[in-house]
Length: 490
Image (tube, rainbow, N blue to C red; front, side, top):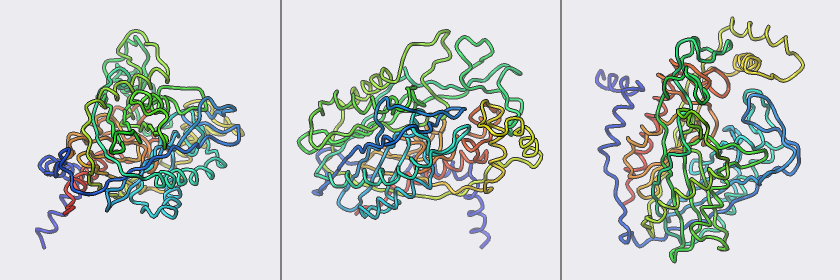
């Protein structure tokens, strides 16, 4: 009894569990699938991109400090859906052109999809691209939820999954990793003491980190962490080589586009199809770009004195070209095992004190009757709103195995250092991290980053999880990857 109690206690400690799981992951042996040596089984795939552009305008647009609306459509929005079936396991992946999607909305979409397809909800992964120029379906900072669009969206996502399943046909799969270091850079900088921006309505004091310090800022000392330049791709074709879909993953925040727009994610989807010769294919080829670990990264390289010139079109093309270089070397498998695991994790919320709430309520009286217009007003309101939230949050994690490719799905805006650590500990040959998957639980700053403060750590609905959330999620995520890698399919 004493031995059992001691082991259980150790395993509950997040840092010890992380070390143990990392060792298991590194030593775990997964069965490789050599091209041409696959079992005599049928692998099937189907894809569909369903239009989710709002039918009525204007709509509220998320992604900024202040609330804004869009009265026109710059380019259409889609939920890009992929269904895979190895003969035993069937699963679905949907990547939605949206900034942030709450778990409640996605759970509704999954329940509808299960009803229409029979795919269990725990085998459905839905993520947001994090375009900052799409309708708001999650109230965040100064922007409220566009309720009418949010009620309409779940049914459209579910319909996209149903149509992807309808397109199932015999297929083969392959994966590869390219690199693009031009468009991803850590945007958080360690600043000289006393020079970083502060927030009087945050739980952080004496900030040392600042996001986007500007080019040539002599107070910026160094970037606070690494970024992940990998362009990871999963390619799906018919057995005779006709492209069906390509799922990409890259870790830049977004490029920036006028609303309404799917940003660089849609540009990538279009151009990768052109590069691999998928134009005119029936059913229509579906290109997909998912958001990687971009919580502390974007396209700006603030280590340079001047800003380079780019836009969402040039970024999308650049990353598609990097993906195409990797695509050329893919070895395809006529069959690959599918595995998927889901785990729910309860975490604490960083709640404001009674004194902080009282101070915020008093300040809010100075702009009563209108929406907040600046950082101070936004975070005062966030303090009051957070005081009305439950003190804990249940989050949903998922891991997928497709042959020797792993997918880690986390409902947060994940830092590059976390994503790289998960990849290093994964027992699978290639691993991609999909952020903002199955919910939007805010920025996931590692404990050492919380000590530095800065925007992505300031307490708000967009950054509310406990300071030890990152090691707990990291440990659980590696454990799920170990589970799917070591699953016995004999």
